[in-house]
Amino acid sequence: MGELIELCPAEALADGGPGVRFAVSVGGQPASGFVVRFRGQVRGYLNRCAHVAMELDWQPGMFFDADGEYLICATHGALYDPGSGACAGGPCAGRGALRALEVVERDGRVWWRPDAYVEAPRGD
Image (tube, rainbow, N blue to C red; front, side, top):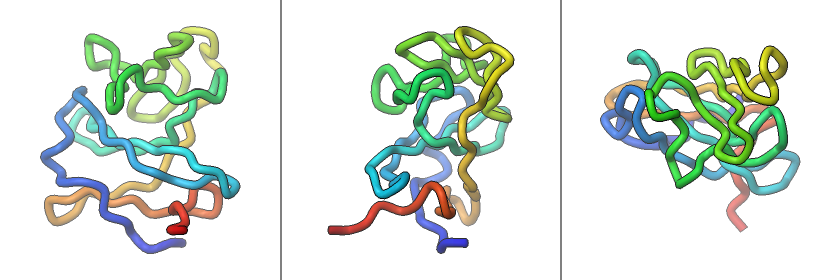
């Protein structure tokens, strides 16, 4: 749908390590998205817990649990499968998921493609 937007160098994302946050717009309101690397693949999600609409990271870019196996909501402890975004534990266990974003790793860079729901922020 939209043009690809460059987010970061591919080497900025280590498997199970810190992610990269970026600004997005949802319904005309500012929000954030994030990208992480899990089992060699780059994954992108809207930074919004499926349990309660709050950002996941406890510090900017810190999305994984201590073992690097799940994405975790710092506020309520909801756990998400990094590969699918599905809620795997905590208050939303078995229900809901993170909203996936289309991300591409190409030419040593990570890119995001906005869609009709999660748009690029407007430059005012």
